Length: 508
Image (tube, rainbow, N blue to C red; front, side):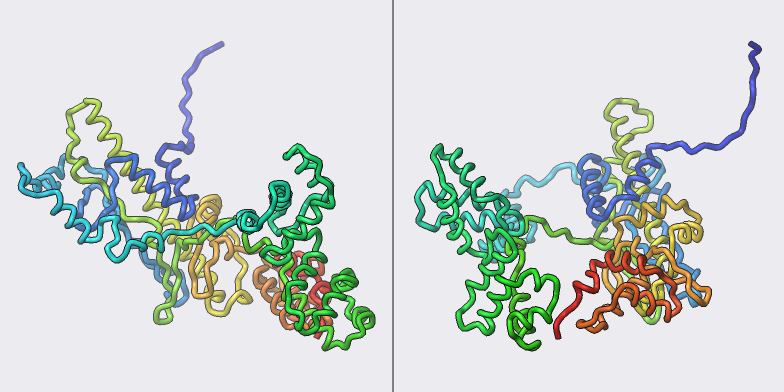
């Protein structure tokens, strides 16, 4: 085999640690980014939050404000990017004369008493103590609401019961699901208690304790089906409640007919007029079919917007949320400790921390600039939505924004995932503004979001006694120039959690 040398010219992308870090930060949500920044502050001595008192500027790097967008027809968009990233690429040795070390005296005063320092801290409000009252911290502390099990066991413990009956009651409470319904038959519960207390328990005993548990709060708990749940709640109402007897009979004997919304048959069997049946149904609708849901263990998740969009003097303005990312900088004192010709372990560690700090802050600025550019481009193309609502939403796909900003679609996808925009019409995920399109009879395009808004509007205005079918909605959309099939209407309706026409039927 003959050996030879060849020269080839090619391009390839190298995933450097800096690039990997920038990509990872780009796809983080606001809450995850806050955690990431906090971890970086704790692990890197060079990073600190800029307080604006001693501004340190590294000559090798400075924050850049992107120019306002000029792609709009009337220049009605402004992009605002305020940054306090104060990290540079220059050698920190050049800035030794500008550090805070010159302000530190050689000897500190020794006549300062600790009590004076403590009093100063508490007076300035930096202490954890509360001078306004001892109960301040308790008032501010978040209290976790009790679960359904804890609430019921608290009531069981207040009830005088024998150890045998208490074991049955606890077993019943433990068997309830999240909605408050009993999931196991009485025989199975009896076997469970028998094995626990090593004594025979009959189903009749479980039935007796079940009635006791069903009398606890919330009303309707420990029911075995929806009919029993509603009857338990009706039993707790005052005897003089209007239409109470008719409502009990309706729930007890004609629950299936009520579920099928056959109101004509209900009127015949209950011997009620339409207005009277409406009163009965209104009383049923006032009951809670899921009594245990109010004690849900799910934690509320709050959305932190990444971008604010608001109108100022007929100009739409796009700004980043400064609260999601504190201003970071390199600690000037630690940076000044690095020596050029020193290869000791400590000096190399300082250099490594400094380089990591620069990469981290530069990645944060790149994330902010990219997010701002994408958000501004979205606002430019969805101006009609901001002005008029969902029905004016325009078709938009990731490729449109990627082509306008000369970025890759994967980058746009990362930026728009779990990032939220606060607008005068509410808070929306950036991906909300992207939707497929449907052709119109006039040769244009209609956004699927706009079509869903029209469907929702048509259903809201329909006759509740004769709801619109999916086929009828498709015909109404066709009259407006939007050609959609019946199955497409059904898909959009189900996506909005709107029941079909037979379940939307109401009695006037």
